Image 1: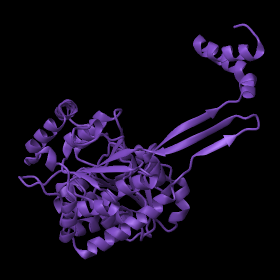
Image 2: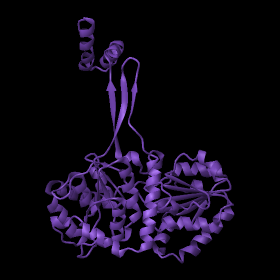
Image 3: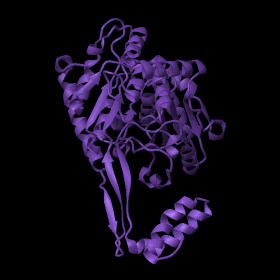
Image 4: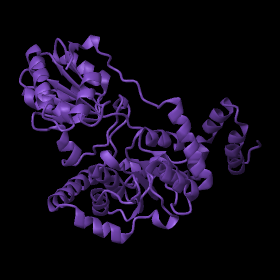
Length: 431
């Protein structure tokens, strides 16, 4: 890994919004599905996945879901069930209630929270099939009270219409009952606008390739989306108390995701920097996804030397990483200084995969520095809020003239008169 001073390293990654050709392809697909419905959906599935479907075969049957259980091992089933419990318990603590505030003058103000009615979850297929992400998308929506959750995932490429059984089982365990074998930008468009076979949703969430990300961006406004996710990121902030082998392993745990993933160590210890660089090379040689991890480390990995942990914290806050691990002599003492990070892992035994799979917090976390202003997926993402306003006659008589003043200051006489006509009736005044 490259070892450099922090000031030599660009502390901001450019957000990837695709090439002009990719954007044009996505616009064409989205518009075709919007206007043609199932016909375009099936056409693009055959073109890109080389799978010929009919409207009747789009939906995964209950028999297929039950059969998927025969193809997953018992250890996976036990683990996915226990993980689902942990995730549900964590997200249950995020629930909030509607509230109302009644004033002595009869004024009632409040906020009503309601779940979205229908949410679509996109689940990648092929080499990027992650059953754990099914849980992370579906369970918060369930906790929020969303009554309809639909999953889309691409069929196996090359003539079969099969879906990874581990994906089907994870979805079934999470409580999804409506699943469709369709992927790519065409699936996103179908969720957003609806077809004869797939009813439209209110929100689309879940990761995907660049075409899925661009499609989500294209339909935003017609529906809500969770985010436009970028490549995975990890930053480890460590001092000379850290175990080099642990640091190296955690850096590689993200580098193996894809060639554009970012893995960075920030440390004031030159000795640790050298030891971690050596460990990364040693462990890379034994990693099954070594080619992917090597490309990530060479292109986006680095070890940043700083003069102090305070300087390291400043670098962390500027990077605003998706995952931050703190491996220092006193990690708890540094938490208050961390302003920007999607998820913070504290201490030597809180390895990032603990959060990815097991602990309970959501692993769908803001990337590309967006942790400066956004949060991991949570229950609030699946709620909508309505303001509640009841004004008594006495309250309007008290405040009406001030409201009129503000409305007329903005040149909105109709607003002013909507209040004035009430004051006139009650006070016997003229407009």
